[in-house]
Length: 81
Image (cartoon, rainbow, N blue to C red):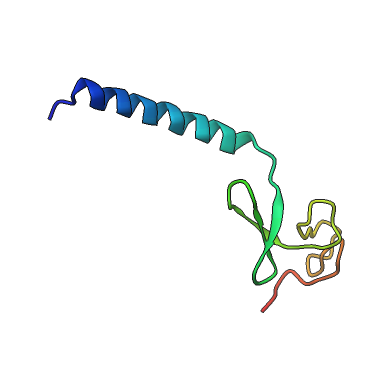
């Protein structure tokens, strides 16, 4: 099936917008927000970021202190029910 001129223009616009969105999504800075269940997700792209941390600067739990069982900032465990 051959596309009409209008359909080709619409397709080209969709492709251009999708490329712009993909470019933006790949380089934006995540903005953590708390969601039900103590999780954190990005307010921009909805990516799940891990556990919400009230004490860390980016509000995401980090486990870089060598003790992988507790958050460096709030002390909450990595494994939660």
